[in-house]
Image 1 (cartoon, rainbow, N blue to C red):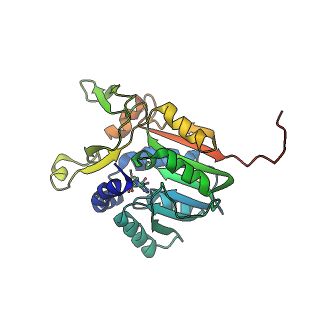
Image 2: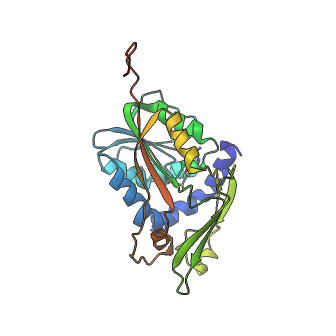
Image 3: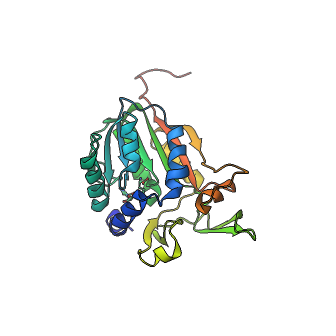
Length: 271
Ligand SMILES: C[S@@+](CC[C@H](N)C(=O)[O-])C[C@H]1O[C@@H](n2cnc3c(N)ncnc32)[C@H](O)[C@@H]1O
């Protein structure tokens, strides 16, 4: 599956996704994943940033409110239009454009930092996507991204629950099988059964890679890993939404921050 096909799936999801996310239905993002991401993020005030796979733009807007000058791209035109509408209603200076994260329309060294919230595992060629993110960074700039956790969301995942319905374990399988655009069909987990009858499920193509493949991809793009995060609701905590509560047992997402290496001085001999 190539980017054009991937874009069709996301385009079909975009309006319902925007509406539901803005109603607060994306509880995993809002209650756990994004707060954990932002608590790991270095200060961005005064920096120029690019958000890749911005969707309807909630996380981009948060970056702008933290004082960053933001550019944002998404491959689905409807997501970009919806993000632009939010910008028009409440201007934060964000420039949203339609673009493929695997072929960014920006000159090398254009940004101080790049973010990608839950979008890189949706791209057919993460090697290209990471090289593109690295290319548009200034030396010393950083990339911070979140993806579905490769160890706990491989092709087979089943949450094993106790009699009360709480997660006890995660059954996984197919870890070493790359998926080349396997289409998952799902709703936001907090959408009630009667509401599901009124909303088409999302259909999202996923490109699973193992943990070591992801590390190799980051390192191969000329980036040095600085920090890794695995958001959890916390052992012993109780959260009313299962998608958050389940992360007591194992994380659903993986966060990585990595810095673009400065070019080595010519002729310099390293000890
Ligand atoms: C799970 S959504 C996340 C949206 C947003 N970052 C958020 O956190 O709310 C994944 C996003 O990646 C976008 N996407 C998928 N493939 C892309 C590509 N090749 N280039 C740019 N965006 C892409 C989708 O259109 C979608 O908006």
